[in-house]
Image (cartoon, rainbow over all chains, first blue to last red; front, side, top):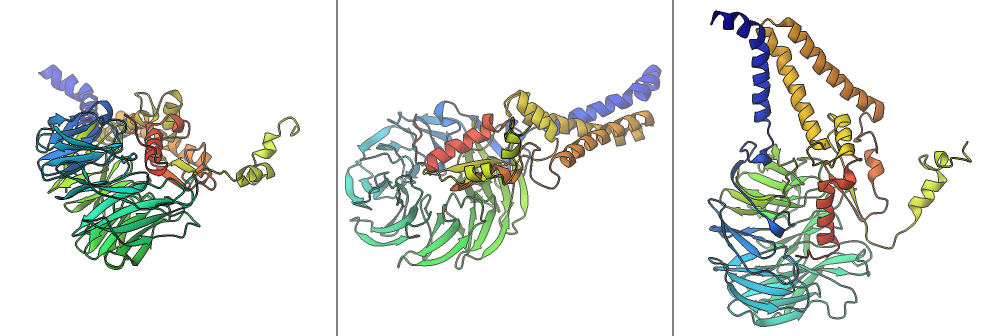
Length: 382
Length: 169
């Protein structure tokens, strides 16, 4: 003991203690992607995913019980534990970017539209389409599954059988490939977003929102965000927020809002020049629209006027997906940015290491779900 | 000399050769990807990215992380050893972490102080002229850019969302 006190603690103890401190500090600094729970949002569970489910640039969804992702098929995870519940049959050609769930059925579409049982993953029906629909944010309600294809057609498929209730061509006679980018529904109206190409390579394009009667597919109005003389576009399904439809003109570098009863543009908020525009439509919470852009900023805007309330740069990285959960706005910039949604203050960043987020987000209550290059995650929102 | 090495003239900013090259229109949709890595420990990032893929064990990202751990450890050692009366250790660790700081600052001053650069290619020089959109990534150094997982991820995104290429199974 005397020897230890004299030499162990006195001479070697100090470096040993310091080295121990260093080791502890290293442990504390371990990358959260290794499964740790440090950072502005607590990691609730992490489930490694394999095959083509990992690293897909997709947008998952949750119904409160399960969390659904797309890959070679649809996979469902338990919301509480992250355990894999089921995996569906395989898709036929490509991986749908979006998946939707409605009344116990999970829907996805590529060259074929699919419906699966939400509890078991059993395939309920499949319906052939005229072209691939894997890039469109397709949506379902209790009535139909609405699918948009790369041949600018919109299908309303019976949710029970998959039989078409109606099919509409949004651009008969359009000479160039023009993709339907997303569909949203409110009341008796379906809003389809289509990017119309005015040149063969798509350099010149416009984003068009078409309002359709939900029961017949009859066109009610359409809004085009450009003339075809310069680059414009639209990405994802417009967000329904009261009287407004919120959308992103990703090539025209702006968020914009359209009156959903008249088709008139109400406001337009530009993003930073010199960068790409926004990559996903804004999300409305109360009187505020939240969004992020490939200009690296996260935005909060007045819902009625589009005035920027605050904007924050979580990192020098283009953001492509965002979500609001709890008091925070999350964004994916190949890292995870977390910003206080009231003040715009950056709460922190996570997943900036080798394992980084690849997908959009699904939110339920105080939880946010997403995919990384290796795993599915659930985080508790701050 | 220039007759034997015309590049010495041609690669000067605003040279007629570069101006001609950049003025040529390209009839296809084009997108750029720019990397803006954090400047801290840039020499280590460059060495790592040169030797391996940025995301690999010996790649730039891990080398930067380990360098930062070492630096923080030396700082703890610097100040912590005072409480143990080990002043030789205080001096040694202090000198070491200050030397690391100096080396890091030297690289910055030597290459591109005050601008976003890894010392190989300056930030604005990464801009793809007349590209529809230039994406930025808080990513890897220029020597690792073409083999970076971030670049791959952005390429996948662009192919899917901008060029409309469906992702095959």
